[in-house]
Length: 507
Image (cartoon, rainbow, N blue to C red; front, side):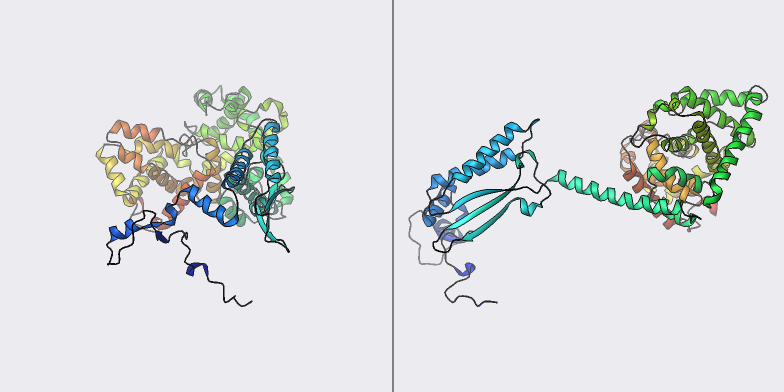
């Protein structure tokens, strides 16, 4: 380290009259009194350097460097003009680029008094960092006290926005894309392995399954497609053939016989299934739903068909359709008539068997008097009372029964409350859980209720509360909101599941 010059005084010890933040004699002209000053007297006889007007500062700087103030102002205006036009965009970019080029030429030709010359050089690297986009270098010439300032600009900077929130968003999207690619590769290695580790697959699926890997992952998690890769083709072929044997043996005969009332109810409910989604209003799709729901109903006489089951087939159908169409296509309005009959049959059979697996775990929701739903609503009430006594008491005081709003939450698994895309993401986690559609769904409902806590407490009558509970604003929800909901549900389960006294059903 070189020794400091003995004549060089640190800047904080200099007694410059123009040091920002320091005091200097007031320009008022009155002499400084010699007695001890009061604060008002001191304020009257001194002023801060920051109080100097812009013209004064320019004049002082010009006097030190022998630069005329008009030249300083002219150069400053040209810099401001150039930078203001760099942020503009135009359809063809010609006028903006020409204006910026003219400004640059003026800056290049401007030579400051005292020998300092400003030159502009273009940086042709479009991926240069912010530090390289606008760099000022100072070079001392050997035989004269002149300084050459070189300002580097990116090429065609008039047509390219400077790094801002947009570039930050782009980098974040790039990061998310890389993270998604890594996740896809992890799923692919598991699913394509000779013997898929189902436990590991569930761990990865809990936080969401990539769209391209969801169909096969759901088949495995529903115990429909075996973990052993060699057996998959034979098992899928056998199960699909078995389903269509049911259709051949029962569909045409039974829907006109003793089960015609069941078929009539299914036939009425199918057009009501997600009426705002064009895909489900197509005749070919409605016929698929009618067949698989009717076959399920006659094979499960203990429950039969119950309104609400028709909603549960739609996520599976959407997921299995997504692997048959090109990436990026709108699956909710896709024309399934473009698909071959064989592909449609595979989708129908896969949807039937996966829906069957789901309903096997919550079949008591749909037996006579729906005791499963009744029990879950009661558990929801007890759990919410323990977690949020204020909200629970507010509902009780306004005579709101939990059954009046939570029955649909349990019967339809929140499908009427959130968009279909959110349901699919929610089911990623449910399928990864041991009893996701029954036990964990309870904690999701508690978290969902508390999501609207503030709005519910603001409602002061029964009508307002019911309108709020039956029309929750979730149309804008996506994976991020579902992720937060699941995280809160997991926290609640971790906190309360082992506390035996918080649910009446467990006492």
